[in-house]
Image 1 (tube, rainbow, N blue to C red):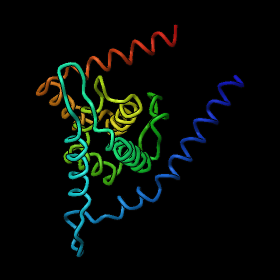
Image 2 (tube, rainbow, N blue to C red):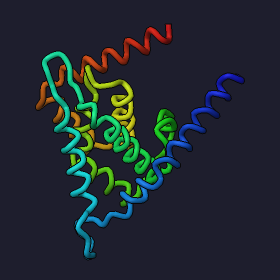
Image 3 (cartoon, helix red, strand yellow):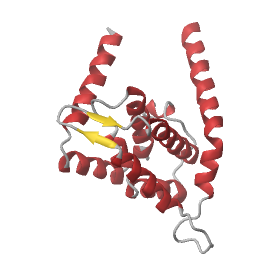
Image 4 (spheres, one colour):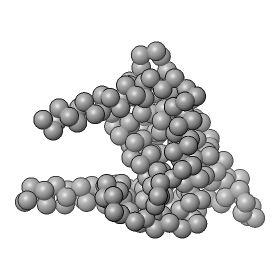
Length: 193
């Protein structure tokens, strides 16, 4: 029990420090005007997000047996995934670790639903799916999966995100995605044995 408590304290500490590190970027994202806003601005949230996700996706090279991400893009990709996840966690008042509780109810607001929908329509779901593949660095895959979990979060399930994921898996060669899932499950099984 003492070990579990220490581990929970450690997880809480790194979660808080990670959030503090990303606070300026979350603030920047939240303060970008949206397309519908009647303000004078050259940068809009949706356009910026679409450009960022398209850029990261364009830096992924897919082969028959593995995908790779341009090494120069790696730090930016991690930053984007973490920032978007932390932004959504703030909107739902819950972190990804808490979402393992099946009885956890999420604060659903119009704002939360809007962010989920906009991130999905701007390619965030597809970007996460692309980054969950054999050959992509494990830390990047884990961050992509965490963001997917938060995107899927909605009381009763987020049908829009589920549908996008299904479309991705149906319309693309999803072999590398499923091979990565198999590898992750095998590692977890061997770790628990």
